[in-house]
Length: 86
Image (tube, rainbow, N blue to C red; front, side):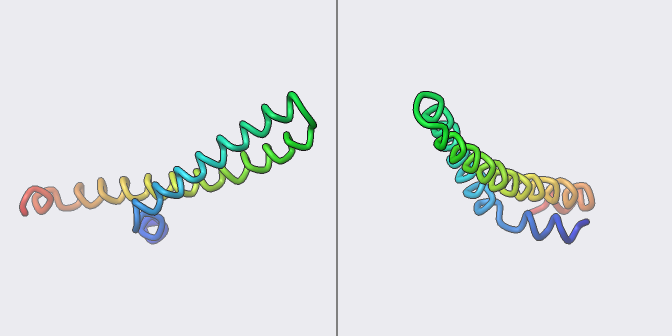
């Protein structure tokens, strides 16, 4: 479990970029769904595709952010005196 957390949380800036890109894809998908409501239904299908990809990318990015935070907490709990000394 710790190996997976270390792999996911090794680069929190990259995880944040992935999360924001997924959020952008989700927003584009919502726009396409609204566009398809007023025009042709094929836009809605494209919107659902974008939403699915956006949720997947955002979830992976958020998992990396969460893993990094969880690892930081676990390291500080293991070595409470080393975290205070610098």
